[in-house]
Length: 165
Image (tube, rainbow, N blue to C red):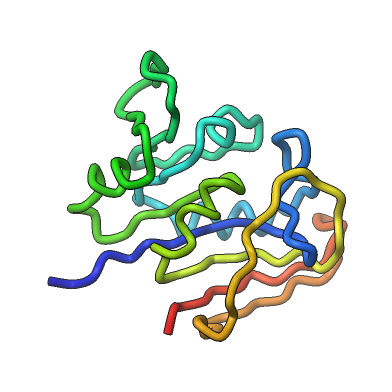
């Protein structure tokens, strides 16, 4: 049986900021386009706060929202789970799963991940949500595409893909 691909996907600044006040602190249309392409048809796991963010993108497959609120209701085929372990169990039959954060969920799930899709915004930002420290000796860079500042993007960034060795 093929091993399940568990991928964390995030846009982070050089100082690992994910966002501030439950919002992204940058606008990168090419990053959103890449996100949609990479995650098409795959289920997402995210924390409740990320789900409630105005920047949240929904899976065209389905979403599992991590929450301790037992009466939290979601529309359509979206589901809740009380823990990351429960969410992973619900998705055991899926060949690929994307974890969207936020910071606490990334911290809990980094050890499970065998793939990272990280957009690195080449600047430092102030924020209140951070991507966890990564031991880069465990990861290999598979692909990197750098975007410079242009009329659509106020910040340079790189679309990086890493695989756990």
